[in-house]
Amino acid sequence: MSFRKAKGNEDNKPIPGTRYQTQSQLNITSTGCLSFDEVMGGGIPVGAMILVEEDRLTDYSKTLQSLFESQGVSHGQELLVIKPGLNSKIELSLPESVSEEKKKRVEKPKPENNQPRQDYSDRRATGDSMKIAWRYNSLQKIRGPGLLAELKGMS
Image (cartoon, rainbow, N blue to C red; front, side, top):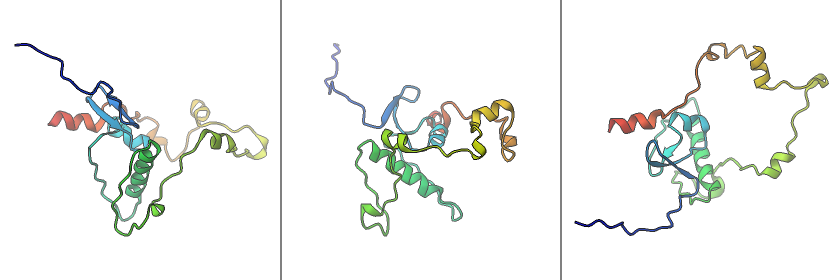
C-alpha cells in the first residue's frame, strides 16, 4: 500500500470574517455581539443555524439579527434575507459601520463643572461602583469554550 497526498486547492484562503478555532476544529464567525459570541464559545460555526425565540416584550431577536447581518455585510459577504413584508434592501435596518475617520470626528461630551471625567475603570479601582449592579461585582466574566464545546461533546 502506498500513500499519496490528496490533491486539493493549495490556496485555501479563509472566508472573510471567519477564523479557524483549533479547540473545536471549525471555522467560526462572529454574530456581531461580543457577549453572545462569548456564550457561544467565540462565535458560531460556519453553516450552523441558531434559532432565537422572539419574546413579545423584548426586541432582542431583531437586534441580534441586524447585528449578524451587518457583520456579514461589513466583511463583503452576500446576504439573503427572507422576511414577510420586506420589499427591498433599503427596508433592512442594519447598524452603520464606523470608519476611523468618523471615530476621530466624534467628540467626547464635556463634563459638567469643568471637572475631569472619571472612567469606569477608575471608578472600579476606587470602589465607587454602580448601585444597581452591586451583586454582579463578585461574578466572574464568562470565558472558555462555552456552549459550542458542550454541544460538540454530546454528539
